[in-house]
Length: 330
Image (cartoon, rainbow, N blue to C red; front, side, top):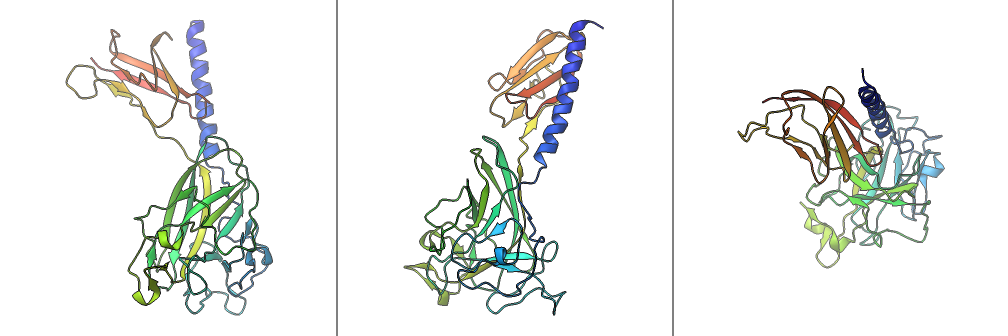
């Protein structure tokens, strides 16, 4: 075996190892206590204004960032198998575990732009220029109106403002699609968002960052609606199973092509949303036959004979290496 082929095979093995490591890295959970299970005690009631039930209950990683009254709902000792059921809110069985969070979105009797939020101290600082997938499950309380604009906002340090009743002066870093209305009162609806990090984020806040006049809603009881001030109903949402993980990029690399001019699979073509990448194609003797990148992403086989070839795909930061074999038919 010649030295060139040994070098290529070694590179091939390293890429496989890096690919396994990248997959493991993408599965690291950034949210602390995402299902609200790690608590010291169950308070057993909804919060009063200015009361941080998460801190009071010793709910690891979670807090209330402002003066409004977000809730930590958990079964109390005298009804251990029954979810809390409060007038005007309703109840929901946790998606997993025993505990869930609850927040008001859409104003209410207190003031038009009254909002409630929950804040999480992330386990790790987000990495610069890495895209993250944010997921959580949400269910609707009893009040009328269906809304959609719930989102997340990241902060470098813990946010605290006990004079504030809302955070509509901020713009969400990622927000649920305006047409994806949250309307499931029986089960749980999965919300999936994506965010490209700056590299300094340590805290995440979940809630509604839209002013009431900018909210999009449907199926409202008109008794709770004011056209000049927007939604006036205390729309209540239950939240469970919050997650933030690195998003795996889309990479499609074919394993066979036939450049015979019939318009079907005539090219070895790489499709990916990675901004900068490089792919080297080798023959069986370890000789380079083609080099592709984000600008030159197709190979027609050139004058090479039919047979098997192999490739090494890398991105500029070597986070998502790929290796494999190609069969060229002629």
